[in-house]
Length: 260
Image (cartoon, rainbow, N blue to C red; front, side, top):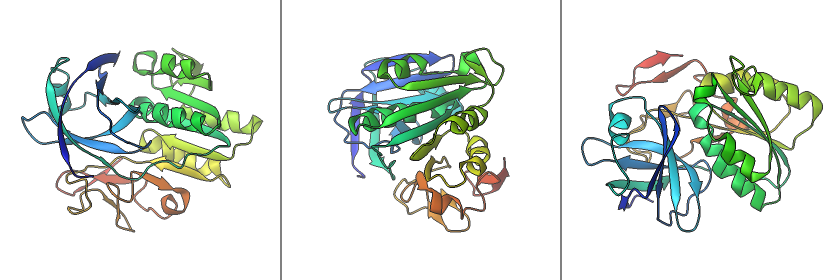
């Protein structure tokens, strides 16, 4: 859906020092894993995953990482922005016993997914990890859903000490799952992949995006030429296993390879 809408920011929530959730009263008809393109009318537009969505409103959760997001953090409730979307593929919504593995500011996408999984009657176990307590987000939101949650931080300042992958491996030794979902830093997902073995899974990827409609090629991944804005950002196991750049490099705005 490549239509543009001008929307008022209804609510801004502080999740961490450099993470905010922006909510809008608008029926978006989004699915978990999809994203929008947003502009503040000053310069350019950027993609943001949907962290929550209902029949009357939706939210995006943003980490301040550059000039564009720094400007967003200066906006107040009631200010207007413009969006396009939604775009991209979405997560398969299982009704079975599922494991969700999240890390850092990519975790909020799993909140939207969790709500949709619960509607299908799924049994959910979530790994919510971050480097440290000050960067750990959405723990209270997940607790309110009534799902099984394991919180972890690399330094042990909140929850269990260890990475999301280490926690997932420990949980999987005690319980079998029907499906696994992951959303987090690419190197986290790369480390998770070998321990999944025979498990079916879907990973949510992030790449530099410009057009969001599959024309410019900025978000393609080697060697398949998968366009993350259309065939992704959610990719199934059979595709992930073929990606040679997965966990090795990504591209900047000019298309230059940047090693992880």
